[in-house]
Amino acid sequence: MATRSLWRTRGKLAVAATALLTGGATATVATSEDPATALKLCTAVPVRLYRNTVTAASIAFDYEYSLWGLSEGSVEKAKVKHEVHLRSARKLQELCFKNGGIYIKLGQHLGQLEYLVPEEYVQTMRESMLNKCPVSSYDQVCEVFKKELGETPDKIFEEFDPVPIASASLAQVHVARTLDGQKVAVKVQHTHMTDTATADRATVEVLVNTLHGVFPSFDYRWLIDEIRESLPKELDFLVEAKNSEKCLENFRKLSPHIAEYVYAPKVHWNLSTSKLLTMEFMDGAHVNDVKTIQKLGIQPNEVATLVSRVFAEMMFRHGFVHCDPHAANLIVRPLPSGKRTILGKRKPQLVLLDHGLYKELDFTTRFNYASLWKALIFSDANAIKENSVKLGAGEDLYALFAAILTMKPWNRIIDPSVDHLVIKGDHSERAERQMYASQFFPQISELLRRLPRVILLMLKTNDCLRSVNSCLLQGSSVETFFIIGKVSSEAVVEAKKLQRKSLLSRLDVLLEEILLEVRLLGMQIALWLLHLRRALTG
Image (cartoon, rainbow, N blue to C red):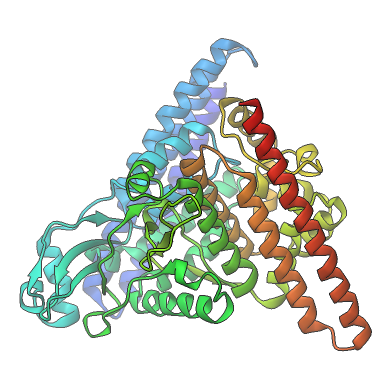
């Protein structure tokens, strides 16, 4: 019975999606001003649709058939479920690589969603999506150069390595040397992105809508709006170049105390277009390469602290946030000035790459988000609820929102101990998260549906940073949360100063600022005592 029902569902998916996508492709050919591009779309859309439908149906059938008749909670069912999760993750991985482009980006994002998908999916996507992306041939690279700059790379550069040093979902990077001898990194958009971006958007849109029609609890239609808005910006490398310069300018103007610790490669504007981006070449270690970081004379915990501070400044002070900080986009190198820590170790500088995906937080959203993190750090249950509701979580799902942000259950979130939000990263904690993800999947889906898209991007950024911290520290540290608490609290006070006009209201803010300093000092003392106790107990 269950199997027949599933095959009916598979049929629904195939018929609905095929009809919609084939019709959409035909309409594209009929209305497009570029028949050649339209023909490519007409070919690409049904192929992608077929792959999507077959993969989705295959995964659904595997779950239903393999788990049929097994007792809930039994060892056998747990073992079989793990195997099905692993098989399904690999099928999804294969689909992402075959379709490429947007699908690889979605796979990368899936690899961060520990609060939503099984660990097998998270690990499979993390291991493959960042460093095993498809590569365009040198002929295809030359094709892009001819269209954009009128010449092949060997005519534009003194040297150009035809083998890319890195390949991502939308582009790949080559090392070159300019005619005046400067070593540069050249980011070249994959040729197929121009032809298939529209097809990818269409297939994802139809797939999500169709799945929602068949399974009403699967409501990820917000993903369509986000792709529709962000993808054109990510495909325009001139937008990325402007974002990188604006990011550094924000640090110089709004966070001068750490500006020298943050860097972005300089752009060679005369060798850059919407599909080609030529930048200063950067040497260093990827943020998850702990051994190389240590060889550079830098302490991993110093890097974790810097990463937390940099992104806290972006979120709570600048309101202009790099929303794709996975390990491949963060490079660490020794601070060029040569400064060292009190222990004689080199101080790190964080180099930010891939500035294609940024989000701006308006004043109100930035204030409420900073207030929420301040409340989370100081275990203020009332303020957590108040600011979660203001951000769109609702009075019924505010505790779940806090749990997703911190990866902690409510009883730990409101625990007043200084290390209440620290993630250990051990198996028992991961198992607990997976249990909650399975138990509250409908509520999580509803929460993601109702939150503003800008907050969803903050969640994505939070997921990426948590993954980075996990690599550097095998979990997280009290210090990183102390920094988040400090920067968010200071941002809240600064925002209130701007809003208060009367002398009395300014005095209220001054008093709040003094009390904040006392609380932060108390937290710092608690941190020292915690470290001392750990040192004494070995």
